[in-house]
Amino acid sequence: MSLREGAAAPQDRPAATISIENERRKGLAAGVTREENLPFLRTPSGSARGGVLLVHGFTASPWEMRSPAEALAQAGFLCHAVRLPGHGTTPEDLAGRSCEEWQEAVERGYRLLAEQTDRVYGVGMSTGALLLLTLAEIRPLEGVVLLSPFLRLRHRLAPGAGLLRYFLRFQKRSLPAELAPYYYELRPVNGVYQLYRLVRKVRRLLRGLRLPVLVINARGDSTIDPASGAELYRRLGSTTKEHHLLGEEVSHILTTEENPRLAETLKLISGFLDRLDRLRGPGR
Image: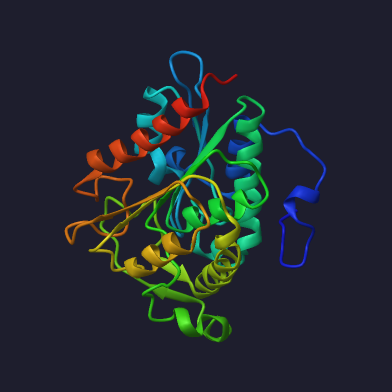
């Protein structure tokens, strides 16, 4: 059963068996047809230093997080990329989903890692970054990396999405052929409204968060307002926090080859988590 608005919070539900096999079966049952769009686990060659929960963005899929997962697994971390409900299937599926369902999936991903390691970090892309912040309110994350986080969208429908969703179901955009298998060309207007609801939640909790945070935005981002990423950074109650602003040549997606500074971005992510992990000493 999906968690809808007004339903019990994820942390109030009885514990259930969570495994990558079950998560993949859920994806297949929901209609995921491509292997790359299923949730995945990347394991290090030796004992894991800790776990990293990777959360993709709106209309994307776990495929979006493969590069940071591979880099972090090589650095010794156990990496799990979740699939947000409504993603990797069809735009019609996403149109009926709520941000509470996305939060539930992220919390389930956390539990999968927490059963295998005593420290869990997070790396989130855009919407995934905001979902990690809501997770940090209820679960003890050791630190998070927020890639292209935002408090304001540049989407022209965003301000009126709450009303428009009753009259307009989708907004179309153009996608390069090579990205079409992993992203949606049609963006549900109700999904944009769910982003608006998620941002409202994040705004309320920022001051109370104390975990270490790395924020990376890009000047060339035409999807969100990068200045709102800086605003998010300033509002965070964390004392250990860093903000990096990449140049005009970098757009919204920071985790794929679309980012001309991908190697630098991956180095920033790995370096930040490495420093946090070394400060905490040997784990499980």
